[in-house]
Each structure stands twice: as C-alpha cells, then as structure tokens.
Amino acid sequence: MVSITTLQDLSDKNGIDKYSILREIIQIQFLEEIYRTQESKNLFFKGGTALKIIFGSNRYSEDLDFTTDLSLKEIDTIINVAIYELRKEYPNITIKNIDTLQGVSKKILLSTEISSQPLSIKLDFSQRENVISPKLGTIFTNLPVSTSSVIKHLSDEEILAEKYRAILNRIKGRDLYDFLFLFKKGVNFNVELIKEKLKFYSEKYDLNKFVERIKNWNEKELDDDVRRFLPLKDRQIIPEIKNLILQKITHYI
Image (tube, rainbow, N blue to C red; front, side):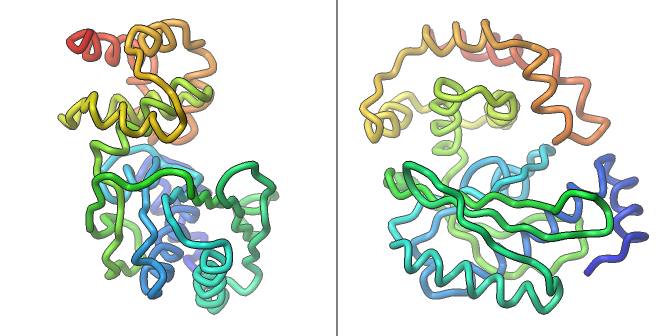
C-alpha cells in the first residue's frame, strides 16, 4: 500500500485530498485485474472515472461504471478475482452488495489511516443498454500504479449521450461538469446517437427540455457536488459551468 508520506506528496502535487488519490489508485488496480479476466470481453467501462483516466478529465470520481451483458454470476466471478488479488496489498478490503432495482451494484470498502470513514468505491453494472460504439484504450495516470491492461470502453461520443440522459434524470452537478468537459474537448453532439440511447428507456429527445433543466439547476447544489472532486486549480470554473454549456448547446436548437 502507498505510504501516508507518498499520498501526502501526491495530494500536494495534484491539489486534491489524500482520500481521492488513494481511491483512484485502487480504482485503477481493480480495473487492471478485471480486464485480465476472460469475461471482461463483454464489459465496457464508462462514466466519470472513464473520463478521468481514459480521456483526461481533471475530475476525480467515486464510482466505476460499466455496461455489460454478463450474468450476475459472471459479474461476481470477475469481482471476486479482482478482490482476491487486491487483498494481497490491502488485506482488509471487502465487497458488499447494494440493493438496486436495475442492473448490479456493489461497493468496495477499505479501512485506512487517512480517514475515520472507510474508503468506498461504488461499482455499477448496467445490463439494460447495448453498447453502440465500443472502443479499446489504456489507462492514463500520473499516480504510482502499474497500467498494462487493454480497457474496453464506450466512446467519448457515447458517454456524452449518456450524460445527456443523466442530466435529465438525476441531480448530480458532476454530470454537468462532465458534459462541459466533453464539449470543450470537441466531442460531437450526436443527436442520432442520443436518440438511440434514449430508446432503451422509452424516452424522447427534447433539447428545449434539456436547456430548461440546466437553466433551473441550483447553483449551490452544483458547487456542493462538484467542488470536492476537482483539484484546487480547476474549481474556479464551477460558477461558469451552466453558462458555458448553454452557450455551446444553443447551436443545436
């Protein structure tokens, strides 16, 4: 396990707390292990952590999100393989089930010296959608962790489409930050792809509704949700997130 001194050095260097640094190290180690399994050929990484370590976002994340057609038994198998390997470095790491109406959700827990609360990483496996534009990639990180596995993941365009739906269906300011990151990166706002993703949930594309959703987003809730996941140097953008998205999205109305 990385020493407290090293975690503090990495925290100072990256402008984020030690907890977030250690969590990302373990996220990467977990991904490395599951993508060594045979079953991972049908497991596609996505979401905020994928944006961070595959596409270069500055936002840290507490979840690992996947789309898959694996069965519950197969998902349990790859998780257990990964946890078995991680226990060699973190003997007290555990995994618990989370009740959910759809898909499979679990949580990795690890007691540490850096917090009175266990470090936690939520795992979400969505079995409802199909992956439309699968890609292969590798993990990018400046943290002291080995990365060699090839990661199957959604394209940035498809993640943007999923973020579009997330913004309409839940209140997490991090979705707005991620959406803006992808827009600024030059990712195509693919209306047909968005419509295709919405079909899985019997939902209709309505850009005016999307714009109103962003306009009415509570700015304090946005700040509260995003701030803790961003390095100090990146937090100044938070008050501008809504306006920057609205400026860019109006070109599609």
